[in-house]
Length: 226
Image (cartoon, rainbow, N blue to C red; front, side):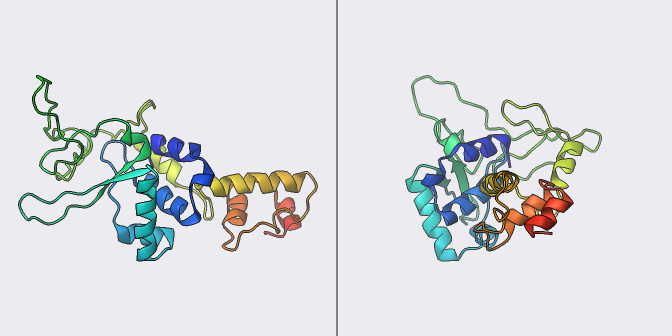
C-alpha cells in the first residue's frame, strides 16, 4: 500500500462506507502502487474481502457513484482481449491520468491547442518499475530497489522487508486499530469488561491487541484474551 493511499483512506469519514465497502476499498488501497497503479482482479477482492461476487460488483458500483474510485477498462490492441481493470482511487481522480503506452490507460491528451506531448516511452531497462501493461524489467542486481512515494523519502528493500515482518494477528486496518486503542484505554480506565464486550465476532481486535503488545501479559490474562 502506498503512503498516499494509506493517508487518504484513514482521512475518509467512516459514515461514508458500509462494512463491505470499507473492506473492498481497503484492499484496493492495499494493492495501490504509486508508480504502477492498481490492478487487482475481482476474484482477489472477493477472496480478501470475504464477500460474494455479486457483493463485489455492487460495492464497486457504489464506490464509483460516491466518487471514491474510478474504473478504467481497455483492450489489448493485438489480441482484442480485455486488459486487467485499472482502479483509480479518489485522491488520484482530481488530477489528469496520463495515458500509458499501447494500453492507453488514463485520459488521452487533448488534440490541438499547441500543447506539448508527454513522453509515452516505457521505463529504461536500467530503471525501476513497470509502465502500464508493458512487461516490467527487473531492477539490476547491483542496484537496490527504491520506492519513491510522493512526498516521502525513498524506502529501501531492507526497510520494506522489516515492515512486512509483523506478528500473527497484527492488523493494518484503521478501524481495527482504532477499536483496539479505544478498548485498551477503557480497560485501563477501570472497565474490566471493555475488551470482552467488544463487537468482535472474528476476534480481529483482540488478536491485534495481543500482537501489537498493547497490554502486558498480566493485563491480557485479566482481560481474558490470553
